[in-house]
Length: 254
Ligand code: G
Ligand code: G
Ligand code: NA
Ligand code: MN
Image 1: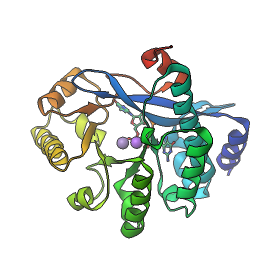
Image 2: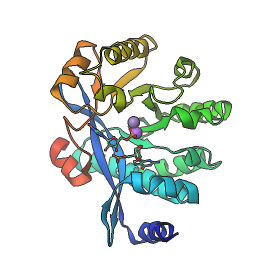
Image 3: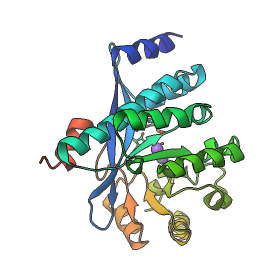
Image 4: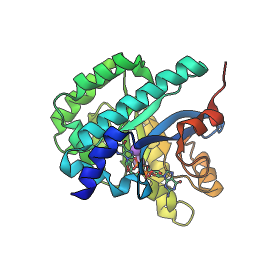
């Protein structure tokens, strides 16, 4: 209950912040997109990670105002980078189950894009399989609406849930993110290498982009490159960083 009150208060006090982690093209090492990851600058506890509060926000429904704040903040940032740095970089926003089921989600998204002047082509939604599975026909309908608006859809943490391959063809997704648990085991487990290699090939045959998540060592990157994995994200390249540090990393002031 205390955490709930804290979240509420911090939302109005402006104590939440978005960090951004670059997603890179493996062949060039250049950032091609950013994933927005929420951080809580708690007045007493300091920096609090989402693992400590996202599930409580989900249970209490606070994820709805919080998620709306994330979307508005990420879109405003994208629009600001375009204006100030002439830099058009796509941003991925994580959507949780409760947000995805909100009846007014499409309406909210439209409003936020319009109010912030953000091109939908610069917005990606990251959704996990478990979220899509809750109601597959409603999910398909929702994703189709987003696609029609020009938003990109990414399936997050693939390979850890039920991971039915039918999802890869039945949902209108553009990007497959291979869960970091697979990447962590690449160097030492032959079976894991087979799975990842096959997943990359399958995704590419289906016309999907592939991102390897949680790439933390040069050895992992080298194995992924040998599998022709196009994109990677992880601590090897960059931790999630505040917007200002991202600017010095990728921004080219006019
Ligand atoms: O940021 P970290 O690096 O600690 O993220 C941990 C988890 O929190 C991830 O599973 C991520 O999907 C989730 N998360 C981070 N930011 C957001 C957000 O803005 N919205 C939602 N729904 N989940 C988020
Ligand atoms: O949305 P998702 O569950 O994929 O959230 C990504 C999470 O993974 C965030 O918590 C982010 O900080 C974390 N992360 C990103 N790169 C790495 C990495 O190389 N190693 C580890 N352990 N975690 C990472
Ligand atoms: Na994600
Ligand atoms: Mn993920």
